Length: 214
Ligand code: TMP
Image (cartoon, rainbow, N blue to C red; front, side):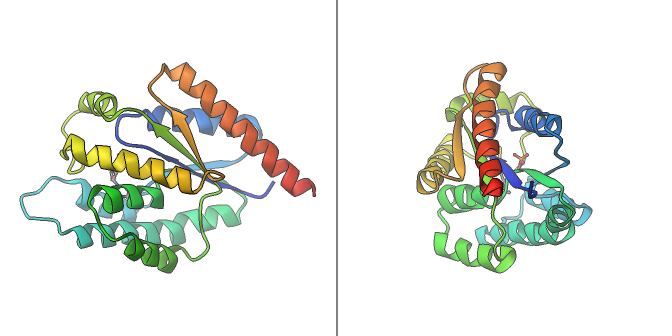
């Protein structure tokens, strides 16, 4: 089957890391070679940009600098890792991608969506995820879980209201693109969430097989 690009999204603390590992195993069990990666980051240079983006600092980080660095890291990641993997028939499973930019910089920070769209076009060309799993849970639950993970990074220091805007931004994206973005309710137990993810993966797998059999 043609290599696919799958992304996982959601606010902090919704269980993305645990479920990424589950999705990877699910795919590998079906004989797929999977490259697991994340944004911002995924290559040595892009991880350096990630460190700059996430480190709390006293100097103000202007919103447009944050946005441009997200896309700078993404450009490096796409050219040096995502496209080469797909070209070699390896599937790419990525923890966050451009939907996060629409949700965090767009909905969260209130930046102009059209400006983000221009950068998306410039940096990605036609590259878009084939499937996105949006893990959705109430903000209080996510932040309580994320708070147990050690010192807060620059984003984790944001307010509940910021994350509420991010969550709603994600849900609006899912409404606008229901064929690609599948909302998974993430407040239940790990195994309940995995059951929902399995249903989404089975359906996508079936659709991709049918598409290639035509
Ligand atoms: P995480 O991957 O460990 O959750 O941390 C990455 C942080 O970066 C997270 O708070 C979301 C944020 N982010 C953006 O604001 N915009 C983006 O485009 C991406 C990929 C991440």
